[in-house]
Image (cartoon, rainbow, N blue to C red; front, top):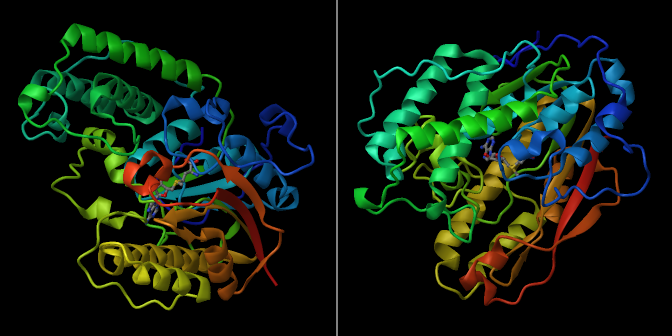
Length: 428
Ligand SMILES: C[S@@+](CC[C@H](N)C(=O)[O-])C[C@H]1O[C@@H](n2cnc3c(N)ncnc32)[C@H](O)[C@@H]1O
C-alpha cells in the first residue's frame, strides 16, 4: 500500500495504475470551457468531508490534468504549491500521476491526506480505548469549549494518535467536524472570521455522553465517504511554505494551483478551532498566521525589496494614492507583502518546473475599496517576466458571491463585476 509521506524527494515513476478516465470523471472529454468554480454542494472528490475554502472544483482539476496524457505515460509529477484541501493531489493521483501538495496550514494537510489515503486495509472503527491521562491546562480549545469538553476531545484525539495510520486522519477530521458542530455559535456571517468566547461562562459545555454520540456520528459519516477510496496512489502532502519549496529543481511536469487572492481572507482565523485541536494557538503563536500569503498581519521583519512588474506596481500606487484612511500605510504594506509572497512562489514554481512543464493557474480579481485588483493581469505579467508564455486566451468566469460582498464597510464602495480567470503557461 502506498501511503502519503512527509518526506520530499525524488518520486519513483508510478506504475501503470491509472483508472480509466471515465471511471473518475464521466464526461471529462466534453468540449467547451469548464468553470473552475466549485458547485455550492460538491461531493465529487470527497469535497464534502470538510468545508475547506477551495480555489476550484475536483472536476475542473481532473479536466486540466487529464489533458497531459503523454506526460502521464512518462510518469509525470503534478505539483500544487497552495494545495489547500488537496483537490489537485486527489485529482492527480486518481488519474495516475505522481503528486506533491504543499500547504503551510497543517489543517489543510490533514484534509488533503484524508482524501489521499488508501482505506482498503482499514477496518471499521470501533470506540477506541479513551485514556484518562490527558493534560488540558492552557489548551487552545478552551477558547470555545469548557474544560470538561476539552478533556473528552483530547481523549479521543490521543486515541487517534495511538492508533496512527489512515485511521488517525479519519478520527482527526471527525473531531474537526464535531468541534465545528459544538461551536457553531462562534461563526458569523463571514465564514472566515471565527469569534472566541469572551470568558469561561461563554464556553460550550457538552456532556461526555452527548459528545461521544456526536463524534461517533461524524466518524460514521467520514468513514462512509472514504470507503470508495481504494485505488493505489502515490502522493506527498507536505506542510511547507510555497516561498521555499522542499522540492528538487527541475522535477515537476505540471502545476495546477490557485494561490490565496488579495481578499483579506485569514486562513489561520478561519481554521482557528481545527488548529487548536492540532495544538496551535493562533493568539499566542503568530508565526503561522504571519506566514500565510494574504495574511492581514503585517510582518515585523523587513521584507526583501522586490521589484514588481508594471501591473503590480500600478496597483500599489493606486492603493497608496487612495484617499481613505490607512491606504498609504497599513493597506499599502499588506498589498506589498501579498505581492512579495506571490512572486516568491512564482520564483519557486519556475525553479522546480522542468523545461517542458505547464502551469495552470486559477486566480480571482477583487476590489480594494473602489480600486480594481487585476490579479489575473498581475499574474500574466509576473509569470511571463519569469520566462513563461501565456498559452490560452484567458478564460474568465463571473463570480457571484464574494467575501467583499459580505463585508458591510467594503460594500459602500462602487465595484465592478468580479471574475475568476484560468491561465495556462508553458515556456518557449
Ligand atoms: C485558494 S486556497 C487553495 C484551495 C485548493 N485549491 C483547494 O481546492 O482546496 C490557498 C491555500 O494556500 C495556502 N497558503 C497560504 N500561504 C501559504 C504559503 N506561504 N505556503 C503554502 N501555502 C500557503 C492556504 O493555507 C490555503 O490553503
